[in-house]
Amino acid sequence: MKKIIYGIQQIGIGVHDADEAFRWYGRMLGLDVKVFDDSHTATHMAPYMGGVSHRKHAILAANMQGGSCCEIWQYTDRTPCPPAEEISVGALGIYAAKVKARNIDEAYAALKNKGAHIIGDIVRTGDQPFFFMNDGWANKLQIVEAKDWFGRRRTPTGGVCGCIIGVSDVERSLPLYSGVLGYSRILSDETGVFPDLAPLKGGYRRIRRVLLARAEEQRGSMAALLGHSRIELVQSLSEKPDRIFEGRFWGDLGFIHLCFDIYGIEALKAECAAAGFPFTVESDSAFKMGDAAGHWSYLEDPDGTLIEFVETKKIPLMKKWNWYLHLEKRDPHKPLPRWLISALALNRVKIREEDATQRR
Image (cartoon, rainbow, N blue to C red; front, side, top):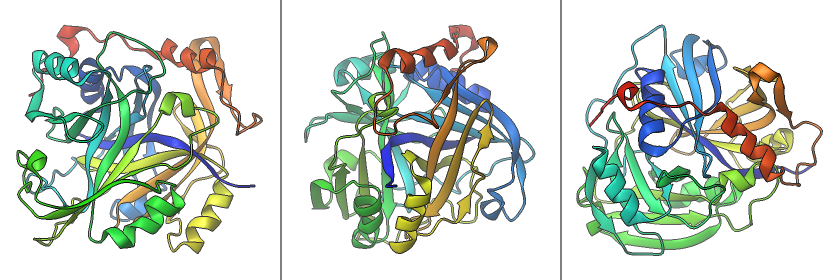
């Protein structure tokens, strides 16, 4: 059995209040489908939480236009710790989430009209025009124009389509990101001071930035919904970078992990160990997250950034009808019918304007 990486399933975001953050992401970015809503003790992640298990509230939010999800994650038995200061470009860890847009000008105008904290102007270099913004809690989002879509709604943005990760040495990181994860297409590899980063803290630094994409077409299961993604590795060359989570726990405020939807976790485990990236945390084979279930694991990149893998077993389509999508016996290479994936929209939450927090 060989492993299959279907795509990025989600990016994890540590927040103060999961319900409030879900409303913000739903209103601003159309991530208004609750794939799961879970409140249990995070026992397996104790090694990354000071050696102690903690209670949490986690919501997996999706946008049915396509793209990856956001796992909105909140401690419920302690106050999460923020970074000591605003995070700089090149800091070690997940710096920004990439979010897809149908038309960059329309997305810019729509988000500005909603009161989003937009940083700088639209950048039109390369094949994907983009701009940066903060979410309601100063986490960086890069809104990028994309052409691959699953469905169509009125919202100008879809889900997550990659991220920017600060690394200490690009060459040391490539065996994981290009090798194990399959992002072996180098779309660009540039060194210098970049005008498009100037509005960001630390954007004046001399850096190496490498933009990666997967060499193979994504296939099987949920690949049609997850879509294409890119990972951008950023290495600071002029200053020693800080670690984004230095002195803090996994689950504290900010981007806490990057998660991939996969098949064949045992084969992947062996491959990761052989490549020098052993699993550091692993769940039971049928771990429950709310009404979903799966087998998941974590490893660390060379700088300690956490990468998660989830082999999904069960997804709730409509709990009150006892309608679940069971994936164990399906052909892992065969895409799920689009109508079946679309049924996840039954879990959409209507977010009223007066209920959505007006964060700036």
